[in-house]
Length: 307
Image (cartoon, rainbow, N blue to C red):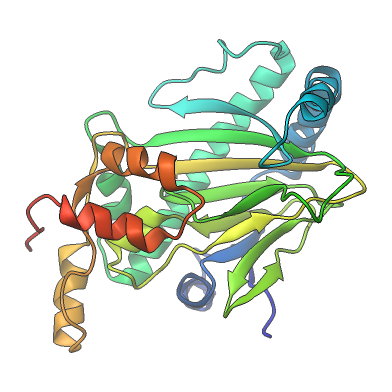
């Protein structure tokens, strides 16, 4: 099998732009995942993010998880909490966070937001959409939604009986992940086989969510992935989700529908819906195949988009 795509953004605005765009296009069409290096986020900041998150887990989460796991049957062997950045931050309201933790994660969120929007515009370039199209499609009345799932996957005594996180696709837009560079576990499904996403220090793993699949009318697809529980080591996972606003209306880009018709591939294959309605369905069906979700939304679809 071909190697997992690792893409450097160095010189993306220079003479290597075309080659980088081609790599991103191949990764989006054939993998739904890729790993970024030279992405513009300072390594020193990434080191601080890793340090404060591992310190917070050891201080506030580790014992709590052990006690919970001892008393409950877990469906997913993970310890998590969520931070919201846009449209408004909740980081000052989340309990047990140090001032340093809050400051570091606020700084990190700003840099990730910039990177996410840069990546969306690179996708626009490849798709023949005007710059800013995907951000605008996500915006709704209050702009995009942006938040971070902070997760740790502790050592598991019975990894054959439970996953770190069960297989699923992500509901939203584009996901940027800072993962542990020592403890592996993330896998994606490609050509019917589970493939490891390689841990790599200071890289950002990117994957596409269901909404990108809808807007591109299936040219790019969200990909099923999971986390395997490990017997040794705690795996850190900081996944940030750049998603549509709750009232954003999502539908295939009209120019891509025209292009598909001209190529003899038929027209609209995906529904038009309000993102919040999709999320309500996803909450109940996250760990099931995505196709029935799309079919259910098609039945309740808003009037089709027109050019």
